[in-house]
Length: 263
Image (cartoon, rainbow, N blue to C red; front, side):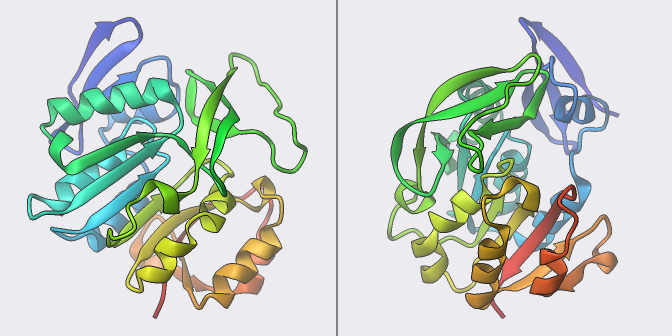
C-alpha cells in the first residue's frame, strides 16, 4: 500500500519502493500518477539496476526527473563509500530532488547537478517542459534548430555541459542511466573520457531514433567502440542481444532501453 500526503502548491510527498520518501509535482500526469498509486516506475529498469548496482559503486543518473532512480541508486550503493551523481536540467525538479535527498538522509552520498547534458559546454540552451508531463522536458530540436511548443509548456534557458566536464577526472564510474528525451546522442558524444577510462562501465540508455539528428552515426559509433548491446524488456528472460541492423531497422516511433557493456 502506498502512502501520500499533499503539502500544497502542487507539491506532494509519497513513499516509493516501500522505503523512500519522494517529493513530486502533483500536476504531473505520468510519472507522478505511478508513484502515488504504486510506488514504482518502469519496473524493468528498476529491476535491471537492482541486479547491476552493488554496494560501494559510483553511479550517475542522467535525466533524474523526480529522483526516483536516484533514490533507488542511493539505496543500492549502501554506505560503503559509493556515490550518486544526479543530473537534471529542469530547475523546478532539482528543488524536489534536493528535498527528497534531504528527507531520506542521502545528501552526503549524492552530488545534485542542475545542468543539461550536452556535447559541449554552452552557457544557454533552450529547454522546454510542462508541469503536467515532466518527463517530456527536452532541449531544442537538433534536427530543425527549432522547438515546437506544445500546450501548457514553457521555454527556459539552461546551462549545458558534457558529462566529461561535470564528473571529476579521477572518479571511477560503474553505472550510468540515461533517459533525456532525445538528447542521448548529446550525452554519448560528450562522455568519451568517462567511457574510455571505465572498461567495466555499464550504461542503461533510452534509444529513440526519431529524436536524433543522425541515429545511424550513433549506432555505428556504439558498435564500432566494441559495446555489446542488450534490449531490456519487462522480464529479464525476454531481454535480447541486438546487432546494429536490428537497431537501425527499429520503428522510428519506438522507444527502447538499451544496456551497453563491453565484454
